[in-house]
Length: 334
Ligand code: ATP
Ligand code: LTN
View 1 (cartoon, rainbow, N blue to C red):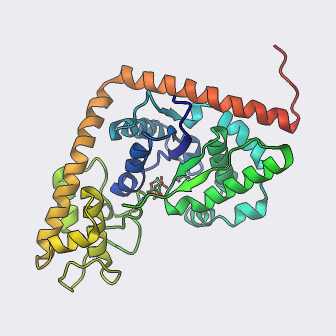
View 2 (cartoon, helix red, strand yellow):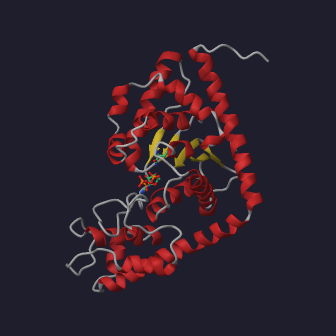
View 3 (tube, helix red, strand yellow):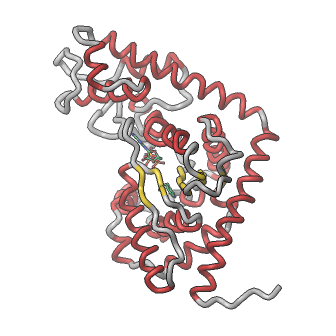
């Protein structure tokens, strides 16, 4: 890795099928940023088990997610791609940071409140301390920048608070990270209820475009996308369905929403939906081809997994040892 570059950390959970929202709102930015920063892109499988998972399914999804990072264009030679569970320092630092985090702070987290309401039969302690593990992820790598969606801002703020609290007691141990929120594609909405964000945990499959959807499915979902009875292609809040389609088209073509309005002015919704569908197909096709190609190359994937774990472990352990010393754990005898 290049020593002159700043450090970036981010992660995604291996739960559910990834959507166009995850790609346009997160993964695509990761690829761009990977040219500029030393990046650690983690598959956060430890976070995934805060909600009950089928073991075989989780393993499969974790590998598919790691493959997707590569297929999207992140170079594993210049950056580090790995599984959280392969680096034990995550859980070890999380334990220590648990002792520097207040119950009251965690009780305020909206993601905890939402997930607790959704999984009322399994409100486990891991779900409650989820943000502390996330803080450990970021602080272990002394990350300067953390690209996340707006929904994760609260977790980033608690990470900064924990880091500042720790530094206040023990000196400058942790770098205080900044959030990075991408501009285009920041919030892709549901195709069926355009007031809600497109989400991989949505029960209606027509609401989301999945990254592995075939062209016919994509075209069909866009044809069925909920719009309005205005009949004009205008970028405004009063027409959330059309606004979302313009956002998607704009994120896929890098054209400004105003130019998209002009391009389709006077044309019908049917024609516009078809154009959006075709653009999305053309963006996803190369990604899908690359996923298929990579999935066949077990040896290559295994090498990336092994090297990624080693590299991440080296950097993470350095921070962990420093923290252990600061809090007063006895020195190791060699
Ligand atoms: P879930 O629906 O299960 O909560 P999710 O689809 O929101 O999951 P996450 O794993 O929480 O996905 O998020 C992965 C990344 O993708 C995050 O950085 C998040 O902000 C981003 N992201 C998720 N959904 C969208 C969306 N609809 N538009 C833009 N970015 C999104
Ligand atoms: N909570 C995040 C996933 C996540 C993460 C991280 C993101 C876990 N650890 C560290 C950035 C940095 C989510 O649900 N999107």
